[in-house]
Image (tube, rainbow, N blue to C red; front, side, top):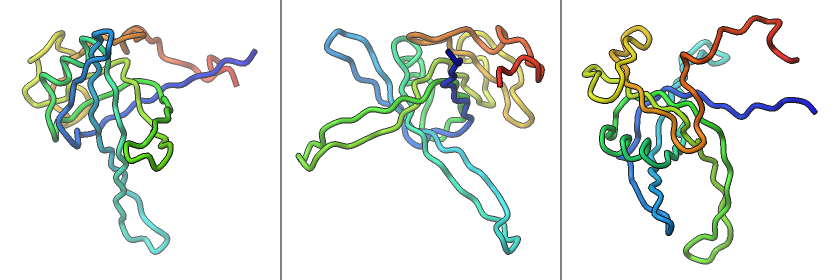
Length: 156
């Protein structure tokens, strides 16, 4: 059986304030969106900017901390997995499909830094200080747990 990977890494800014809700069983789930921006030269050489929007889901304590410390415009680092789901439209017009990123690791990237948890130090040039928020439901270890990969480590 071939190995498979479902992992996403995003760095962007929140497009709206996080919203926390609770499931019937009492688990908290926080939703927010982030924007990532890409600049490129088109065929004529003119500079073009493209913004992509990503729906983020953070469960439990991790989500509650996101709701407490993040707000619209906040820079954030997200590690997670892509998830797809369907739901019935409220107006009864049929099923809707949505793509979401389930956050497994969140780092708050702000110039203030140290406002939460462990201070992870500088995170890239000009990004200020980063604060780690531990893995949420089903999350794995942090970036420090990963050893660098060589070309020989890649299975394909």
